[in-house]
Image (cartoon, rainbow, N blue to C red; front, top):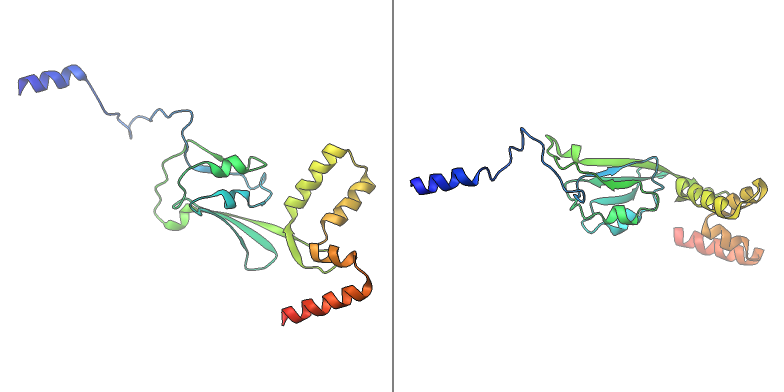
Amino acid sequence: MLKLIKKVIKTGDATVAYPAKPIDLSPNFRGKPHYSAQQCIACGACANACPSNALTMTAAADGDSVRWSLFLGRCIFCARCEEVCPTAAIKLSPAFELAVWQKTDLFETADFPLCRCRRCNQPYAVQKEIDFALSLLQESAALSDAQLAQRRAQYETCPTCKKMHGLSSSDRIDIGRHLNAEAR
């Protein structure tokens, strides 16, 4: 028994005093995702890339917005969301202490308004995503204000109206009847 005690004393501490002393984390440590709604364009790339379905994009109850939500209880901290985000709106932080008293505290949400079509007034895309695409276009092509306004009108028209606008009036009437029949 004395041999064992001597060996333990000689070896020293093998554990860390975690609650009393912070843990030294690796620079590549993947902890809680930090989300910036101001940078997000609600493109849904993170939700598509999430293997555990911790990130979701759903239509809000009002029908005029899209809700981005993160449920930390399902997150596996794989960093795929960080890799695919075009605006760096989501980054994994070193935070790992995620204990909460209520399950609702594990949810993060953000709502994004939808753009309504200029012709039919139906919501079809997130306004921030359209604004982001136009800002990239303006930076790369150096458009004038008139050209930018023309592009905005094109971007703020839904695909159905774009198709109908390019067709003759008789074709539009047939498509309109078809769409009304489908709605019933």
